[in-house]
Image (tube, rainbow, N blue to C red; front, side, top):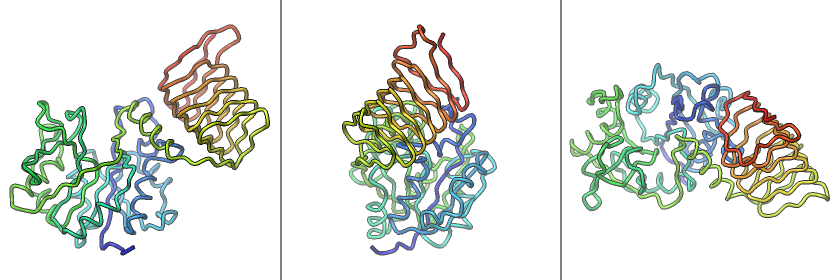
Length: 359
């Protein structure tokens, strides 16, 4: 595979206000999807595409992001951290990253996006065609949630950030490829009514000033994980890619069906596991029914519960719950039921260290 003369910029400064209470105490880009932080999926995509130099834009959760990623060597990457003083827009993130990026084309990736096919195809197409900018588009049902593009044939004529009136169902996927002309654009535009420098305005500037801007359609699955239901959908999609792997212990009384991963140090005792399911390292599952579509992160304890279609983070303890579904539990959450209590068909979104007890 040829190594592209290209850097990468990943935006990991957003605070994830729509994901509270989960994001009150942790970076949204580090929420584990199928037991891997969202941000790590992007880093793997860079490596697969042959990119080696990566800038990560951080804000209030910088220390947490830096502790998780380090110098990038775990992915064979060289990482540079770029602090953003406040969430002043995607184009502002490009503007402050100019010293790191200038001189080579770059791919910009929003750190809370999940693009299942990766970016290699789009990087190769950019290298072949060499436009000033290349955007990725996908058809969506709720265009008001996204930046959208209007096309005339293959030509991009207009871009609007979160339109109040439907003008197109072609949403901009959170992956962009640019050359140095984008820096002219981000310096030329003014803040929007939201007080931010919008990347859609910067790309519109390129269009209006005769620069070459091309679009590529995403044919695979993509998700902007801005809402709890988006996280659950992304978790389900990534779990669907699992291949069975049993590195932990499963006793003879347990029954596993479908694709199931039991990571090292995990124990499954007298339980039914209905894949796709991943059980994280050092977790214990006893007398339980787990799955489908459940990710159980590291060092959890689950006893006498039925859990399906849920994302459970590390160090959670669940006891006597029938049934937990479509739920997201943060780190160290405890949910339990006394004998004789009733807690059927629970749907919960609980932040880190939350405690819920049903009497």
